[in-house]
Length: 83
Image (cartoon, rainbow, N blue to C red; front, side):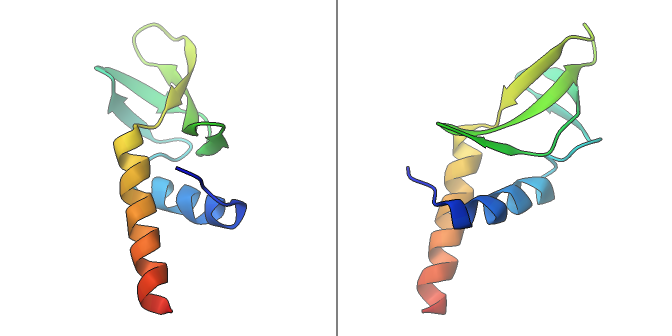
């Protein structure tokens, strides 16, 4: 999946609306985390920085690929119907 730079901001906005935003608490991969960053694009997807609530360790969490693909389909659908 290739994400163009112009779509990166839209992807990040959509991820924020799903709860992947700084100062939010999420449960993912069987643990609770306090997010310390907004979503960032990486080579192979998107991630957020977070602190694990149980251990206090800082981690970079990859946002599940299924969520990224869902947003990509939505954006592709929206651009197809806007044309």
